[in-house]
Length: 168
Length: 425
Image (cartoon, rainbow over all chains, first blue to last red):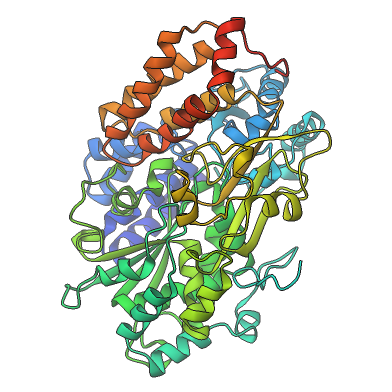
């Protein structure tokens, strides 16, 4: 019941924003991200909802959803860990951190843990080269990483306060 | 260091963002007041042309000339876009700038908007900079309450709205015409030019798009004059200060505001603290992934657009990535090409097909499976990449071409040994 109310609230809010916008299409990424947050990923239902709200075709939406790398057309974990693999993090042995995460979580890049908690993805330079090697967990940045630090972050994500306030 | 000008980062603090009041106390919004009371849009254009301000996003195009690209009788509404996408590897200056002093960007946008007659400004922010988007939205609404944004700014006839656009994330969105498509909710691939965006940009209306650092310079130019701005530079051909981002094998990676044209050696040795203990400078990329490797013979180069261009290099974003003698530059180039291959929008053949092919050839060479013929194929691919539709693939060709021409010995050493000569991996 609560979930239905939340969803109705979100749809109302999005409808309002779209009505007020001079060019509703400008909101397409915002709408997809908001629905993704609601559904956990941009499911077929969510995509249809977005198309209906914006008066765009499913094909137009798919063309965008498949292009942007922060929009997920398949289910992802509660925490999406994106390890930077661009040149500066590579120089700082970021590759090894990626391998460490794969070993710790028991999954490869692109996979999700069976408990649905973590998805591991590579990401290109996130603009924190002064704190390389770096990674994102959902939208939060963690820099100056090493193996111990990563273990601690994973532990906190599993159990502690880090779980709060991390929108996808 | 004596007399180093602090302009763009003068309000930078270790632990927090500068708010509206503090910005005003430091002289903020005085340029806007001056402009709206005493200067015409034409005056502003003239001042920015005279200042020699060049676009800080990488191309170095004169900002004033871009403004002049919007014809006086061009239709309305007109738009201004601040490019805070910042996805060029090694680059993080716009992140530092906005976290330090967001109102500097806001004031720069208002001034640029006044100069070109824009009624709306959009700040395009990448997903990894989620916090930045929140800061900007909060500070824009504070500026609105203070009648600095919105209708009749400071009681004048000038009105301009500002808003933040959150990207879904892809490198190509940093390219100007692709960014305009992205804002319009279209698939963000680059558009054909002409028409230039200053004629037909957002919603087919005149649109001026600038990098964040470029816009942040504008209030200072208006307040202190073009000659003052020119005089900040150390080189004859430069103007203003530059935010140099240093990363890689130096002691103090970071973002340093220095006079435009500061020598590469000074940036690295004095400001970034020199190389890490036991490591020796081998090469650097002077301005992100889309620039050529610079070898030690260029350490005394003046880091400005024109000076580097004359040496056959590009300043790009001024993001200096430093490699030491233990780094395999062939491996580094594989990494760079992989980045470009992954981020290609797929629209044109040289980029979509060419980059994965280059990656495969390079990777083979690096692992000792290459031949001389492969090296020649790579050389011709570096040329072919420049036939692409937009600057992405030509950008990728820069490190590739310089690897093959300036570090040919290292490439051939892989062939001779049949393996990578660097044992660090």
